[in-house]
Length: 319
Image 1 (cartoon, rainbow, N blue to C red):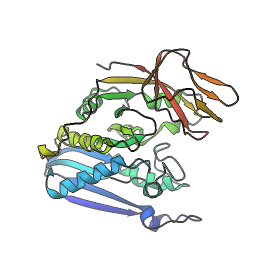
Image 2: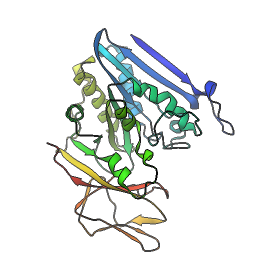
Image 3: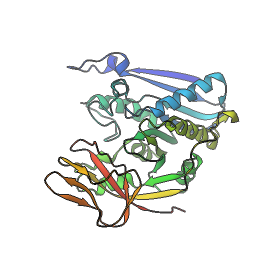
Image 4: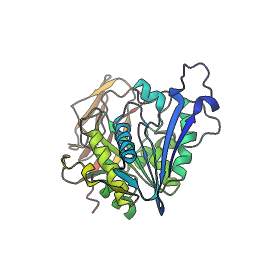
């Protein structure tokens, strides 16, 4: 059974003093149910509006379902290809508030993204497995964010076919002295986990990486097969994706950009850094130094003041 639910926020939530269109406020939720019992699986795209690889991959998935190359046989598959339509249209990360922070239902929504929470959270309340597809600013390889190290999470992560994992994002955020409101660490996956879901974020590579859509598409195919929700035409699988050695990092810290400054090097994601290395230097001379041997994670040279500048991590085999 197929259902397409169109949520038109403009009818329910007018946004005063803003220029909105019907397209800006419409969320398309696609849901498919198989004849047999099985788990529910949700895939999200464009939680950040300038990260379009997930949207393209999910639209490709929908086309193959329509064509019969993917047959939903059990459980339920739900996808929201564009979770932040206004940011997607403007090609920006978010409009008024980062949709992947402070995620929860809002009784008195103030920002545009608050209204989106009130549509997305009920979907997440009803899912057993979640895959949220993203890309990132710095140069680097695709990887999966693990929220916890439960056996089911590890098995689901490995089934996606992505060899690199990072875990401990929420803990690193909460422990950081730069974060005063710990709810900032509540994104889509953190919210879904609180509802009992196995929830993963997949970073499909650098923004604009030519294979990011293929990585996202292959991960969703693998998830559908692993969960036994769908029969997939074997010819759909992409067999020539770059496959790096398995590599896992536990995140240990986070720095917000507090004032004008720059990195001391062209750091890439998962770049090894020795203890004592100056990672960044503010214009007033203050230096941020690597406390111990490890890795820099998701460095964002263009981060505005007050936003996440870089994370730190250490290698962990997770085996």
